[in-house]
Image (cartoon, rainbow, N blue to C red; front, side, top):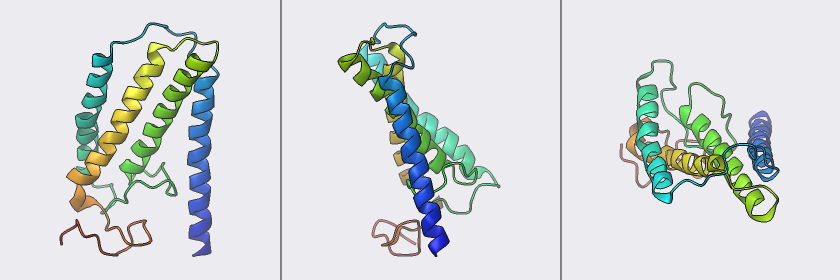
Length: 164
């Protein structure tokens, strides 16, 4: 039990640290040398919306993958995001990385010497769309998801929205 708690703490630290580094990299202008044009908001909205069915397709293929876990855990900051058997963990983590890098770049452009680049806007739209897609996947593929209990991590508690 203590080992599981330490592992959860380590993975939370890992995820939060890398997301913070992505944000700081954006603020410091890691993409400042790229095109400084802005993208029309309707194109960004389209990118956000298109990310959702793309996530459904990718996760749907993983649902049929025989090497995938029998049941998936709901995305959780304390779980290993690099488990190939749990694709939602990976996409949840990378969605936050993209979002943090893009928001960092926008913050750096607003309050620092760098321009807000098209790349920053794409990262925000893509990362946000990916996270929305992960959430939609937990609904669409609910039968593949482990039951959520009072302690989280899919322990066999009761979920009022889950039947059978």
